[in-house]
Image (cartoon, rainbow, N blue to C red):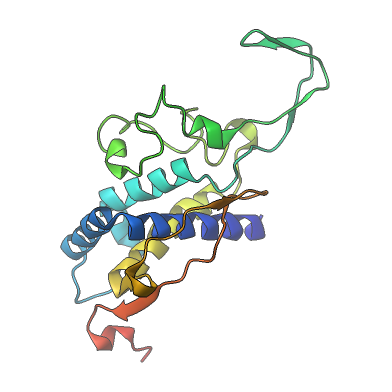
Length: 208
């Protein structure tokens, strides 16, 4: 469970950072929020997370566009049943296509665009904890990902810490390649390469 949680968390953070680098106006808003809530005289603390409204929306939008697990864990039909007009025989193994659900244009206007603001306006009520079936990056029901609490704590904290501490650029300031490589997780097709430049007073980087 721990390995699965850390792997999917790393995947989501990689996508979030890639999307931010390709959408500098969103990155600027995130930095403005960090500087307003925390400033540059101290480091981000776990207690600050509840105040990062825009940062949380960024995480949600990254999980919507690039869910770490594109398909749910398999389910098996216990009895014959009909789903949306399709007859499903008992014993059939079923997968939920999370990747497709998250890009359904009937639910998500401009589904391929990175727009964290949607989670502050039109989709403000939508949560990732399995209660809203249009956004289920962790699955839902009794078999929801057991690492959900860990991920929802560590992802915003890690992203906030990284964004606060460093100015992040790509080599030659190029756009990040967002090609996907599908497998058990939705990996980037190419490694993410970045250049980090400190943006805080140097004493904050000391371990002493």
